[in-house]
Image 1 (cartoon, rainbow, N blue to C red):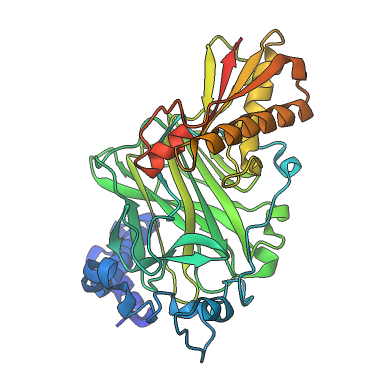
Image 2: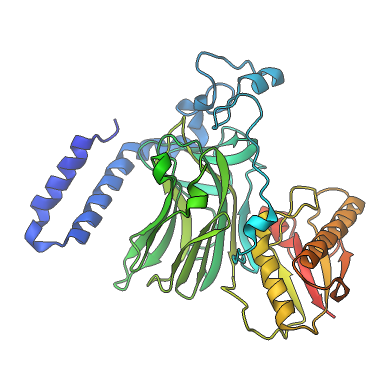
Amino acid sequence: MKPSYGSAKACLLAIILLFGIHEISSAQLFKKLKQVVKQTASETVQDRAASAAGNATNNALDQTGKLGGLFKKGEKNNNSNNNKKNNTKDLNGASGTTGAPIKVSMTAYENYDFVPGDTVLFADDFSTDQDGEFPSHWDLKKGQAVVNKVANTTAFLLTDGNYCQVMPRMKTPDYLSQAFTIEFDTYTDGEGNESPIVYLSYMDKNGNSEEGEISFNRGSEESDRGDLSMSNFPNGLDADFPEKLKAGYINKWHHCAIIYHNGQLKCYVDQFRVISVPNIGCNPTAFGFEGIGQQDHPIVIANVRLASGGQMNMIGKKFTASKIVTHGITFDVDKADIKAQSMGTLNMVVKIMKDNPDLHFEIDGHTDNTGQPAHNQTLSLDRATAVKTQLVKMGIDGSRLTTKGFGDTRPISDNDSQEGKANNRRVEFIRK
């Protein structure tokens, strides 16, 4: 049975009686209440959490392995491909296979300054996981979650109505450095409580384990659609989404990004920097996702990437390195079409070249080993050429740039994991 509002009030009353209003501050009271509510939710679902990864079909899925809430009521799927196409329903309410991510123009991101970290530590697009199962590269701490297709994209769905918490499987418990970036995509249909929360684990000044929360809130009313809030950090901020982001926010994919560097933290949604905190007052050591989802309206997460390093900016810096290795210039799958969120890295390169007018670069494209070698070589050259074309559009003289494609012949990591492949998919700028 889920905890009711009455039980939550009872928890509050119990806290007040236990500690005494005169002995605790309002901030302490809120923290205690939050801990009790989360603990109550945890106790309610802890038995289910232990078996949810292998038995999620009991409560969240129908016989086809699809989320029951994504099917039209009264219709039954009989496992035929045709019926899957006809009976499935995207979260935006349109039947069939509509709802693909909207192509965003590069000009919309012309002022974007997010640059991902240098080395990918964890990456998951959930493409290797079976629909209706818990993903193999994650651990479940609370609630229920499954992989399923949303708006033509394979995604990780947090479906528990009490509380759900998931974390990536890493080799060590503390893996975040003094500089890191986190990226993911999310989708909302504007119903339920489907606001993803990124939690960052850290130790407070007394040596106690804490979890700071960054909530990407979709908002409840069209007139007040969306904000970003931070809670349980020593220092944090709240901010509304920009008006251009609020407009038509629902029924779309959005790209979210976090960059941390020696205490400073910035958060982005699409091309907008929403929050910048000079010092959050702690050093995060691990991350995960959490929140309150529903089977019909889950929290949707896709294309997760964690990287170490990450530059806040390159303004005014003299370039002396022999090359720049970038993972922030990304492309559509098996294509040379540059994704709009690559503009942060491209803007950095443009700034470096304008600050160093004598600088010339060879642009080298690299792929992972998916596909045939000859195809990969052609694809990598096409991508390098696309980067040159974009830089010329941004004001760089084309005579300062040459291109080469190396396909999968020069890996810098293994090709046995998604993060390894992500590291190998890169664009390098070799100083000439």
